Amino acid sequence: VIMAGKPTVPASSEAFHHIQVANNLLGGGISGRLAQTLRIQKGYTYGAYSYLRNASYQAPFMASSQVRTNVTLESLEIFKDLIGNCKATFGKENLTVNKKMLIKSNVRKYETLDQQLGMLDKMSRFNLPNDYVKREQDYVINASVKDIHKTITAHMDEQQMIYMVVGDAKSQLGRIKDLGYVEPILLDVDGNKI
Image (tube, one colour):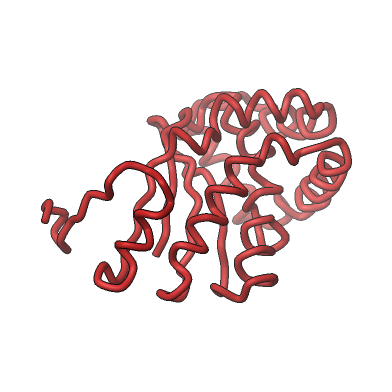
């Protein structure tokens, strides 16, 4: 299991939606770069995603996957590369594709009564304005590459992320050290330092 993440902003913040838009291309679904690389190209996993959790506190931005043990380091290198180069590789063409995907997905986002109740619940829990859905849609339509780059820099900086790996330390710990980060901290199943 690989997880990488950092705190961002509460779900009540306008920036929360901006992060979701910037993240969509990276790991918002099976068409995201993480899943396409780790699952489709490499065959290391069934799925790999990045996402934000709805929270009233600083919501964590997370990227995660479950990979085969023998490709732990290779998978970590892909996480590091894709997240670290997200801004540099996010151009105008990517923005156009991302906007189309998000706009099309919004068409069916509030069709059912359950979805509409979910929207009202979200408005209530995070004190969102009555027109928050329209504001979010307007942001998607009007966002520029510069806007996306600004969001990635502020909230998705790979160098600020904490990595957690759950797996076979005997066969993988030495390899993980090759990633070039600080010395890994080993924990037992109860979270105590070993």
